[in-house]
Length: 219
Image (tube, rainbow, N blue to C red; front, side, top):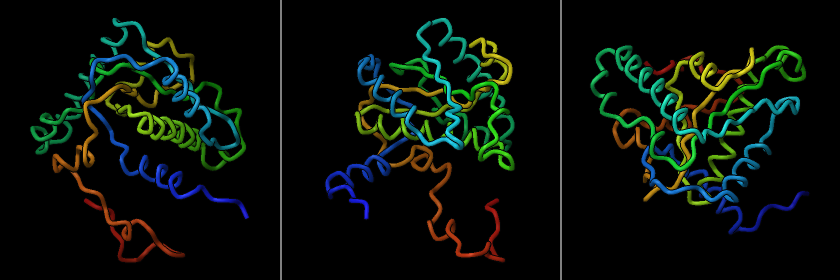
């Protein structure tokens, strides 16, 4: 049988999982190049369906481009607030990104030409997106182990970001990632602290053999 990690190694893995946070508050210090390279390599070693490796990562170093990306996020933030109806004001009080403060800004995208990859995607073409999510999670956990915060921003107009980054036809941005030093990590998810939502009990998410007949999606 395969040998497990020793106790301290195993505890470190679970610690990174449980202490990872979607960070929105950053310290304006640069990320060391060697550390950034380790994080990018961690993302690149994520699992992918059919080993298609659909992730593409754009490092944003142009201040004007960072500002333009922030502008499209701000526009979508306001549109999202309007769409939330009675929760609009509650949403507007939330800090949803740290794009102008973080040391590194990355855009994670799906590559073009994904239709040629059939293995594992014939009936579930969205598995390319699932693979990119695995790469993001790899980077997130590695960042926590390095003492760096990361935040996933999904409030943006897809076509605007595609145009700003000169993406080829078929490529698609998935996430704007804020990465950098933080004063401290949140003790719990910020949206839980702000009482926007709470973590569901594990028992409500795990079924055996069949979907429970009395299970209803939360309203």
